[in-house]
Amino acid sequence: MIASGGRTWNGLLEADFMAERLAVLGVPGRDLLRERCSFDTVQNARYCAAILARRPPLAVCVVTCHWHLPRALAAFRRAGVAAEGVPAYEPVRPSALRRAARAAREWGALRLAAAAS
Image (tube, rainbow, N blue to C red; front, side, top):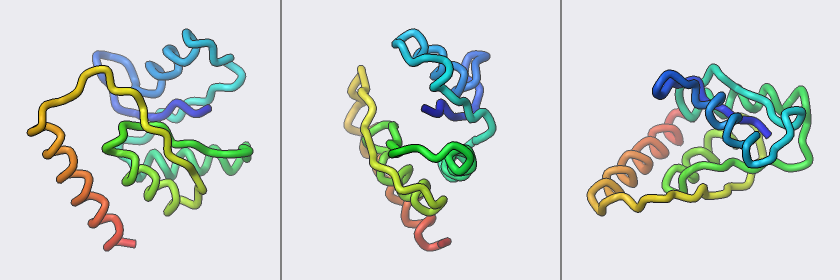
């Protein structure tokens, strides 16, 4: 399992925070890798692809918010990773305006990425 993300939130790297939570949930440390350098989805996919090339898995699942999953999967596939998507649980349902803004941003980013490749 790869916990990934290089952004810092409240003094913690995303990858480190996720790894700590996964350990609390019972994921053994030997089965948990960290990717601490990515600052966006494309970098995340590229850096994880490099890690996976060194330790080929049986299968790859990308876990992220349901609204971000299509773009994340597209980025991983462009990086050469054949992955399935798993939507993460969201404890709070955002407002309709927030959902619409996210959908517009994700759709635009997906289209831009497709045009660039």
